[in-house]
Length: 117
Image 1 (cartoon, helix red, strand yellow):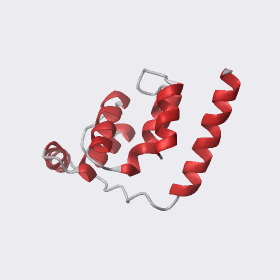
Image 2 (cartoon, one colour; image 1 turned 60 degrees about the horizontal axis):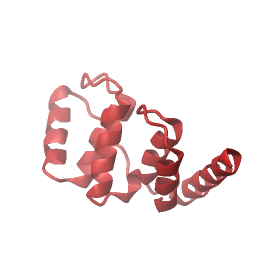
Image 3 (spheres, helix red, strand yellow; image 1 turned 45 degrees about the horizontal axis):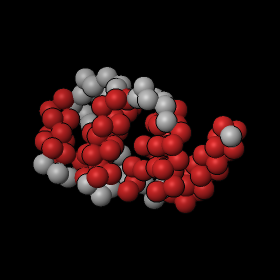
Image 4 (cartoon, helix red, strand yellow; image 1 turned 30 degrees about the vertical axis):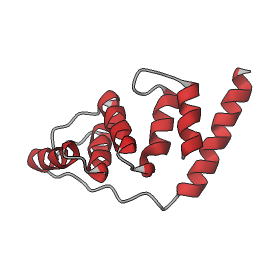
């Protein structure tokens, strides 16, 4: 059963990746702590694209802004962006759940997000 679920997740991921290659918006590099705070204010104001950018800063970490890599914060912001209508983050959310990067590994949640993507 686990092998079949793992195969399905891998298949969904490959199909989703094939469909989304080249469609994700460019990630805006944050050059300072001030820029990150401005970005975060836009995100907290409801801007779904800013939410995704804040999530990416946490997901990757950003030396220029002093933000350390934090998968828990990244997942939280990716989920907020998804709730606000940003569909470009679905695949990343699925991957975080699939790998357990934020501490919670859930094949069921990963499958759900891969399916949405």
